[in-house]
Amino acid sequence: MYTLDLNQMSHNEFLTKYWQKKPVVIKQGFKDFVDPISTDEFAGIAMEETVQSRLVSKKEGQWQAEFGPFESYEHLGERDWSLVIQALDNFSEEAAELIEPFRFLPHWRLDDLMASFATEGGSVGPHVDNYDVFICQGSGKRHWRVGNKGQHTEVIAHEALLHVAPFEALIDVEMEAGDVLYIPPGFPHEGIALEPSMSFSIGFRANSSISLLSGFADHLIDNDLGGQLLADADRQVTKNSGEITNQDYANIKRQLQNLLDDDKLFKSFAGNFLTNAKHELDLMPSDEPFEADEVSELLGIHAIKRLGGLRAFYFEGAEEGSINDGICFINGEQVSFAAEIAPAIKLLCNQTIVMPDELSSWCDNQHFITLMVKLLDQGYWFWTEAE
Ligand code: SIN
Ligand code: CO
Image (cartoon, rainbow, N blue to C red; front, side):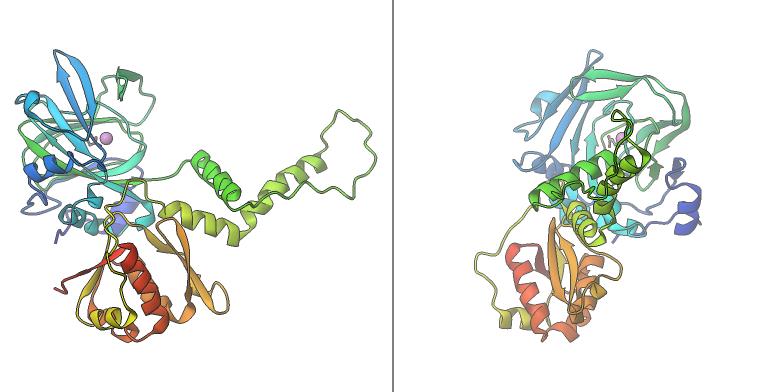
């Protein structure tokens, strides 16, 4: 278990002073930090077909980038390269543990856990990200520089690498195992390995208005919604036929506004959108479908764990959504549940692991067991030892 110590700062103080405002180094945020994964294991994961990985290197001053899966690393030499894996939380239970200390932020804001191994001199280059990130230094040391937010000239260092021009440093620090660097969106940064080293980045992404709007449009199209035509049965004679009157403009705007104001519709879009997996899940659906009796019995013995990277959320007050049923969202789908099992649904959404004693009052609930059978069959939750 990883425990984050914000150096005497409470979570609230951190949010007020730094979150989305300015970068900060938290020296020894993790005491006695041990990498959750070995470098060999890490290199092995980047060889898998379903994993998004890239190798960034610099040869004779030229940036190079290659995309995984990789077959070998032998050609790379001893320095100036870095191997990056996206969504490592989907593929390593141990690495996913590093997300837990950041649960003081809501899970829907989380993007993924990205990790990198770099040899001496290795870096992905100076760049700006559009997400908040906590970079946790693992084994080895890296030199990090962070500049101020502002207009930074973009440099296409390679067709796959968008860098920024050299910047003046606000933060210039040598990070060692357990140090944490928080960087809000828009602040240029660069980390260069001083020796072979691992780094783990917990990223929080905010969707742009354009991605929300295009996602909403897709949702309307997929569900055959939003086809209502503009209605103007109360129209009066037009004096200036080339004019769009204020009233007509308001009517056009209202047509779109009405869709956004329909909370049932917008929540169903937002729930699907926010629980959609951005990276492939390491799904292992069960070979044999589970039986209700079996699940009911096993829930009393084993803990259940949510699959790494799987997103499951409910809206505040969801259990009061309608008279009989509540709604939650799991991996891009809307799931209706009987309002009486809302406390159990909340446990599934709020906790990565749910212990047998926490579910004891639900083991015999038909509604809960039916849902649990489905979730276990899908491989969205799996059995684990109750510690
Ligand atoms: C890295 O781990 O090398 C890069 C992390 C980042 O810049 O976000
Ligand atoms: Co970055």
